[in-house]
Image (cartoon, rainbow, N blue to C red):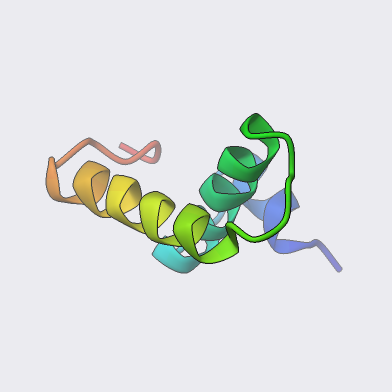
Length: 63
C-alpha cells in the first residue's frame, strides 16, 4: 500500500492544507534550530503562509 507522500510525489493526490501546514511548520522549526518552545508560533506562521499561497490562486501541480 502506498503512503500519502508517495502518492503525492507521483501526482495522484494533492496535499491537504493541514498537511502542507505541518510540513511548513517543521521546515520553520528546522530553520530556527529546532529549539523548543516555539511550536505554536511555527504552526501559526506556517498556516498564514499556506493560506496566503492558496488564496493567491497559484495553479495546482496537476494543471
